[in-house]
Image (cartoon, rainbow, N blue to C red; front, side, top):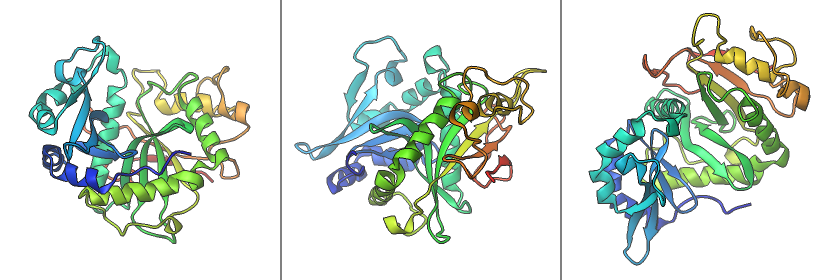
Amino acid sequence: MNKVRGIDADLADAFKNSKLYELYTEHPDELFLGVRDNYLNLYYNCDSIAKIVYKKREEAVSCKIDRYFLDGNHYRKNKLVILNPCEIRKNYRVIKKHSNDVVKAKKDKKEKKAQSKLVILNNENKSSNWFCIDIEYANPNFRGRFDIIAISKTKKPKHKVALIELKYGNDAIGGKSGIYEHVKNFIEFNKEGYFIKQMKQEIVSIIKSLDNLGAEIPFTIPEESSISDNPDFYFITLDNNAEKDGADTPKQTMAAYLFKDKCWDCKKLSEKYNVQRDFKIDVTKKNNKFYSTFLFSTQTLKNGIAINDIIDSTDYEKIIPK
């Protein structure tokens, strides 16, 4: 297992004294700060627009950014460039423009934009019982990743953790690398006990680091013992709409890969990749080694995503495991 992620006091202090901190606090409706292994990622649209590290000799922070966000050219070699915080802030409008561009090399951009919107709206909502502490969670010991990690603000009797995969429209649901691969990875995650062995420690460390960075944490920082040993898994689908008359919705497409019988108005089952057939589980039943809650919404980026409660919103059609 790798070390518990988090940052030291030098990085926290240097960040808070930098122009990046000013940028971060000026745009809370656009930016998210991700805590890593003694570095930070500043995200816009779930794009890392600054990998922030502490330079001991200069007693200041330095940033790495993909050159694309500065010039819009995807085809350069040696993409990463080093900038100081002032340069990131100075180029913020340009960075936003290139992040928002819809190009072939950014085919999942709608999903990432929706992910960012959902997280930021939730964290702005003081009435939500959930607080998103991380996005784009990855770990070298675990093949999969989680789009969003959220923790409940209240203890009943312990804080609950939501591990969330987000889907937007029909893209990336089908085939081997879609919902099938995610379920396969999450089964492995449960089997190996990564949550108890490592992630609970990481969650506490992330929250402490965010607090040291000046983020507003809407609950008392928990100890490991006050966090439930069993995370809850969620698949959230936005733009659950058919692309044209007679076409499948994302929910119907998903069902084709999840079940051995036609459920959720599925028209045709996947013959090659099928979760229930291959892993002998119904992911909507609690008596399995892995199960998940499925949340579907027809809201779209075009018409405006207004969900500000990432789990408990009444806008979702909910399929809760029984």
